[in-house]
Length: 163
Length: 127
Image 1 (cartoon, each protein chain N blue to C red):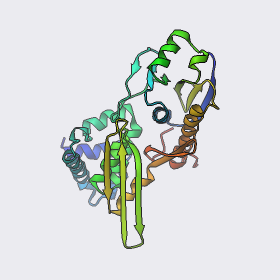
Image 2 (spheres, helix red, strand yellow):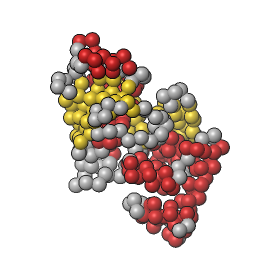
Image 3 (cartoon, one colour):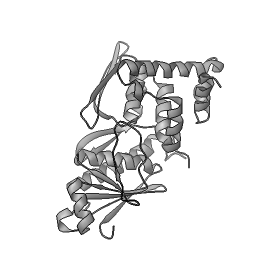
Image 4 (cartoon, rainbow over the protein chains, first blue to last red):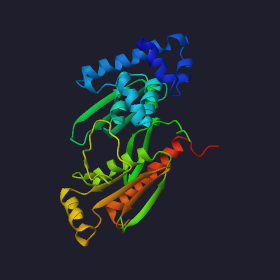
């Protein structure tokens, strides 16, 4: 089986067949999303974290142990544009904490978003975009308060869990 | 736990709320120690990475408090230094000594709110 077909199967077998149908022509959807995965891996390699990039085998294992996290990544892959922001989503799914988020928008003129992620060991990663299609990132963030302290807990899948 | 207060959080994804609860605890207790309730094994909290938490586990404030709990059980000197977390179908239970103590109320309040946020974001209330 080709890698493109494996990517297409990963999507269709996990409820993302709409993402395959939405791509035109849908027969090329597997190739397109494989390209996004490849670009993601290349971006992470340049950043020195290629060993943490998602792989098809890794996503399959993740789906067995924590399908919510797999779904969160697939939702990022199909709905966000830049490798940089999909990486930010993936790193949050891996447990990096959102330390800060800066978002700037001026109607029909400019958009920019920058996020800073921290690990418990004080490692810092910064990701940025000027493509408003990446703003889907924000939809997946869930919030709470610890006392009165505002917290963004992480990047979550939005799809309703199966009953 | 024989004593303590049980806080039950309804959620269709207890695995996610359990993991986020551990993160919330870590914000309060950087030296936390996680123990599998069934086996007694200490669980290393790996970030970044993926791991599966057991259905039932304890989170101690630090190694010293774990030692005290192991040796003395619940006592005055280790009060409010441990969270007991239980994942069940459609709910997460958090057991603490006194839920009004700040560290406990911070963690429980945030976990409850996150469970509601997830349900709202996933439209679990929709028909």
